[in-house]
Length: 346
Image (cartoon, rainbow, N blue to C red):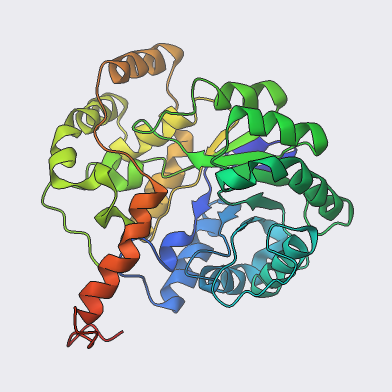
């Protein structure tokens, strides 16, 4: 497996986003199977594993910690701190505070069965907390000096916030959605990361599976699958976005690769970007990690990007749309009467 640098942190060229083992993409594998798959990814060369306290409200961290405990010294472990309190968290001093951050980190370390994190990020800093980014940078700097974390980062933030935070405590990485269908960071944020030597972790690098070519207009998303409420995955928009998938398929045929691998190779053309796709099957792990061996030449990358520039992307991914999923799932499980629907009691 080829390696890349996220700041000063050396990681595999393709990482593993672990959220889907616990929530977010419909039916989850049994715990034993999830653990086997996470360890299989490591056996195939993956050394970067990403989770967060908010994923399935602590459960994903516990799962990832259990899976990686035997190989902790061989991997880079990433988790994310949520500035907003999560169920069961009672921080009198406030979550977005020096003590709140420390308590959240200590709890994550326990769940992850480790004494430090290789990378700890701020997960979705609310707009009203924008003014605290310098304070957060200082608090994270303390944690780095104490050895609790080796590096820190931000998620879904502006170029201005990146610069402000980096001045206080140099950032290791920024984590945001980035794919051939989500390019909103190319004008400002990606150039700033490159300028300052900050790594970029790209989640949903295949647009939640759309760019793999395995999702069609009739694909049904069930349970807590976030694609049920994200506009990009409506039947109408899946149809309208088909030209993007066909473009990936065209280049895949020419390169002897898969559309998913072309999508990942396009993201990885920027040497400081590391994609962290989710993968919950043996064949997906082999396919996605294999993308590290697929290289687009400058001419191929330019041709693909020029073709993308001419296409319109329909739908997007917004947190407020994802937030609607909770109500949708509750209604499905309990109905208007509040009585559990037979067969869906879990």
